[in-house]
Figure 1: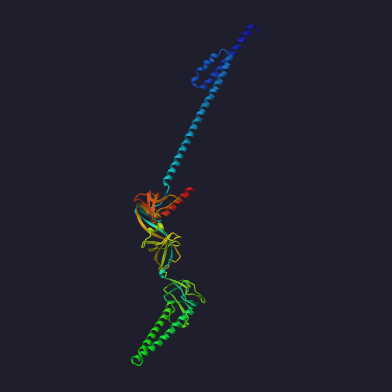
Figure 2: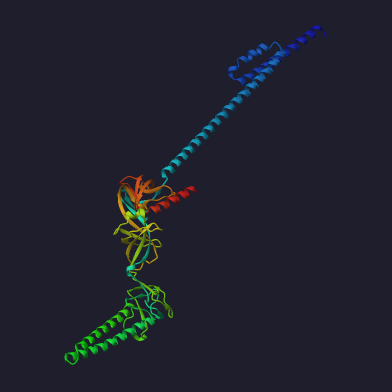
Length: 462
């Protein structure tokens, strides 16, 4: 091959490489334009044009441009994804924050509603009427000062008889039983007594002597009047008659003193009849047939239980309040019963052991409710003191066992209102704070409201 041919061939090869480089540069510039956008399109041809004289430089520029375009595209995609993710996260955080705020507001409203409704029992007027609620107004009242004294029911000693034989003997028969109601003079028992027999024999002897003395006196009197006998004989007969009369009267009085009487009856001269000295009930009986008794044996106790005594013990500090004639109320401790009476007796001495003085209340007992031996409480009215605000004691309740409340009418029901209490007499209680004068409160039925309040609290706790 000639040198010209080689030169031409070399020149042609160089031109081909230059053309290929230009085409590659143009492709890289177009790709960069597409990736970077319109703003970067002007810079790419310039860069490609500057690198065109050299193949290697153009090739490296193309690779760099491709890498730069790819990096720019990746950064754009990353920025776009980050923007999208950030917007989503911000949106979720805002939604979650809004949800929390709404939940907190709902909880706050619920708590406020619970606090506003605490202690409220919701009842309609029809329900309140059906439950028997009675509303009254708080106002001034008088608190009674009362003294409570322990006592015991006893027999009325003025209407109680302890029957004793008053003679020694043996019980022949018993005609009255324990708990039997007997009349005055009714036969209780019969005792055979030698002492009674002796007394009746003495009376009979005296009576016979009296009869003889009377006949002798009549004869001597007639003889003296007829001037047959001397006056001294008449006077002697008169004296004997008087002595005989005294002897009869003395024997009769002895029998009367022991309750035997002059007549022997059908049981013989030794028969001694034990009779009831008053009308009443046989509350004690200590006799049996065949029993030997003395003149001091307690045989029967008969008491008229239509009247009894309430014996009370009064401590020294309470004595100034316990006065004769003071009205009292006696209440049984074993069952629901009470009676009114007055102080009938106050002891003048204080017991050395008990350090109390005895007092007594006379009680009428027509139905026999007050039985001897029953323990009672005696309530004595010692004075009264006025207070500005008071309520009925039955209206006060303690739902939690600590604070005292009364229920006051309010919109939708009845509200438990805490009050501070003062003096009380069991029926009326002073209110020192928590309630105004003239304010309405539930006087009757507060216990039902307390039960409803407790039921609502239990349901809320569960």
